[in-house]
Length: 218
Image 1 (cartoon, one colour):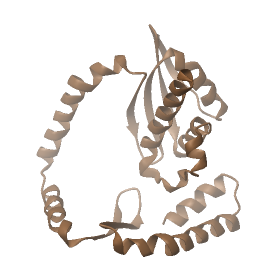
Image 2: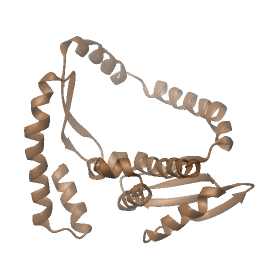
Image 3: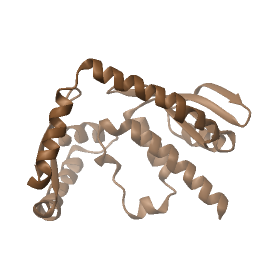
Image 4: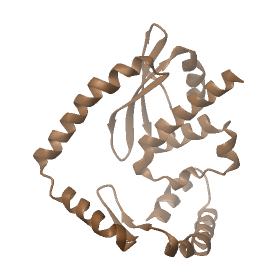
């Protein structure tokens, strides 16, 4: 499943099928040589057997000392009623409004996910103006990314971004390309699957901001 997804994505990026399959096969060899032998020493090993937009199938190998408590917790989750789930969601919203939202005006950046599906996500970004214009220039370098509904208020600027998966990956590459530790460790963005697109965008913006703050201190 992962190989099929990677093949479809990388072909769109201009790579040949032969080149992609060669890379996939090399990673399989690395997995068999370096990762698989280590699993017998690990506390837990998790393998994705299949995945689609609705559900995923996992194989989990865990030490028996942890299994029974984990099983108990999973059984509790399976029996949670819809009423209880809605109650928890309502409580989290109240906690957000009471504790998180009031703090956003003191932060350098605040990122809210307005909507999300398997193809794209809509974000509201509230950032200090001292960082906005460089961020805007970087976003403009990436084709087909435009900010909407830009609102200025004191020293902050709020704007809306609608992004698909490839655009989020391009943003990550653009905003993190000057961060040396990611480059030197050969951070592999394509190991992150589509369920992590929202987190990837937020991580991109946070890395950009932290890098700017470090630069200002040097």
